[in-house]
Amino acid sequence: MAHAHETIEDCQISEMAIVDAFTKLIFGEEQAYSSRELLIVQALRVVDIRLVRHSHQEMGGYLRNMSVREMIQLVSRMRDQLSESIGALPSDRSPEVGAAIARQPQ
Image (tube, rainbow, N blue to C red; front, side):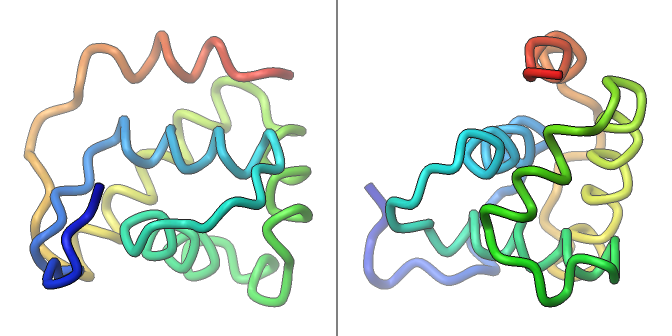
């Protein structure tokens, strides 16, 4: 559970956190998104300008239609965008990312 005093700059956003947020969008979970997840959603809108006005449900459909290769490339672009935005990402790729992405529904 996030603490009320946590700021976006305090968040460490790993590739797995990006994949987790994407999974939430893909499965259409409408529960409240954390500040970290909302930051990831906003970064997705920056990385792909076509999504600027899309709802979370529409973004989930977009992600659901991606191939594994496209998803891996998008996660990499997202990580770069978030790194530029908050400068708080680890420098190495988590080994679980490829496996987690491969499990995403096609």
